[in-house]
Structure formats: structure tokens, C-alpha cells
Amino acid sequence: MGATRTTSARPARLRLTAAAALALAVAAVLYAFGRTHTPDYASSLFGLRGDDANLLKAQAGTVLLGLALYQLILALWMYRRLPGAGAAPRPVPFAHRIGGAVLFALSLPIAYHCVTAYGVQTHSARVALHSLAGCFFYGAFAAKVLVVRSRHLPAWALPLTGGTLITLIAILWASAALWQLVHP
Image 1 (tube, rainbow, N blue to C red):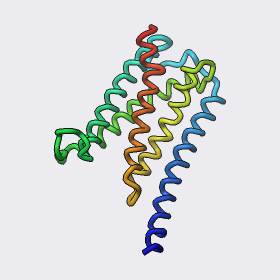
Image 2: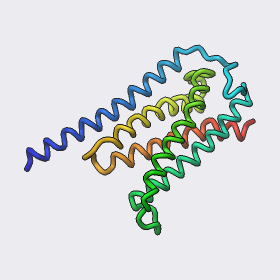
Image 3: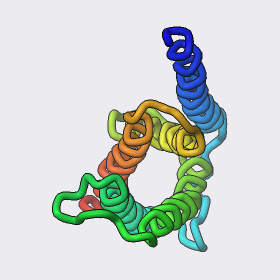
């Protein structure tokens, strides 16, 4: 029995290590690109430039935060952790998957504009936090996809990766969208 436990624990540990390594690798590549890329402050987002583009990103970021909270509620419902909700009906996992795809797709133009217009900057704590959280968001997303596709992982692995994504979205929103909306 001890040999079976060790044998089955090893692949789970390897998958968790692979997910963490993938997250760090994606974040490192994005960070390296953002630091070496020459920012183009005149870059546009759907035809908007400067403050107009930043306002659009702040609004889209607010939608992303709302979608992240929606994802959290659906995940809690699917795993019967939503008080008083009971078992989730069949469409909930599908809605969660579609919501995640929409969230990811909506994040791409925002991230593209951030990295091409500004790159990774560290001149202030708020900007550095935003830059690093943006890099880690895509690393965490890649790790979550790997964790979702893996079987026989510890019960805490999926909530940890999902919670990390929601936390990073909240950090990204607070360090840029909220700031832009409060300081136009």
C-alpha cells in the first residue's frame, strides 16, 4: 500500500510542479518581453489613443472584474460551496467554461495595448504591481488550464489556481482601472 501511495503521489507532484513551472515560464517570458520592448505611447486600442484608450481599458477591466466574480460564484456553486444554492444545474459548468473563455478573450486586447504602449515598467509601486500582476495573470491562466486538464491532483489545486486568477484580476483592476476611473 505504501508503494502505491508513493507511486500515485509522484505523478500528482510532477503535474503540480509542471503547472507551477509553466506559470513562471509564461510570466518570465512576458516580463522579459515587456522590459525589452520599446514602448509606443501613441499605440491605439480600437482606434483610441492616450487617455481615451486608457478609459476604454478601465471600462473593459471593470467588465473583467465582474466576469471574474461571476466565475467565482459559478465555481462555488459547482463545488457546492455556495450557501443555500444546492446542487448546480447541468448548464452551470458549461456557463463557467464559456465565461472563462470570454474573460480570457476580453483580456487580450487590454494586455496587448498595455505591453505595446507601456511595456513592463517599475517606476512606481502601483505601476510595478500592475505590470507584474499582468505577467503573472497569463502564467496563472496557463497553469489553471493544465490543472483543469489533470486528474488525480490534490483537492486544493484547482481552487488555488482559480483563486489566484481572481486575485490577480482584482489587483490588475485596483492598480489600473480603478485608478484611471478615480483619476481621469
